[in-house]
Length: 157
Image (cartoon, rainbow, N blue to C red; front, side, top):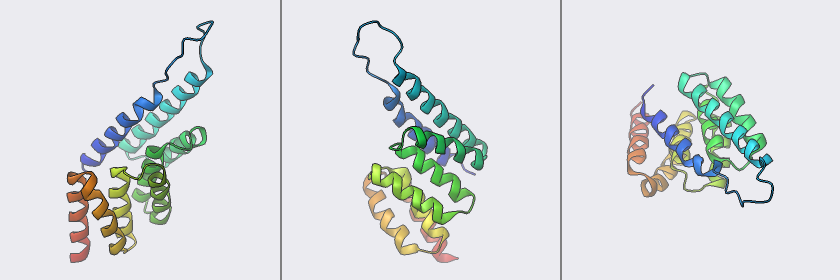
């Protein structure tokens, strides 16, 4: 396993950090906000899922991302990362479904475009992978090149 996918996952994690920073309106009492605890729990579960991905424990990662999505169903990176885990387990159809959910929430999520392209290659749908390559070329040249190489490798085999 190369380090590059994990760097992208880390980047995705960093992109979600602003979602966890909760702007406090400074309301009366200054007590703890229940939303903060919930947001903190979602972030902790997301980080646990990320660690499990990094360790190659894809089933554990899936459970963590499922919990994230139960608490925050609009967490695009959780869908994308859960798709990644399913793809690594060879569950391409499930992965594709999850990538579509991520892209419905964030149409310009480069990681999801690259990974769905790789999942489509896993089920022999080269033309679908190429559609995502076209989009990815506009979003991230480096990821586009990686998908382009995977498509070329698939065509040679």
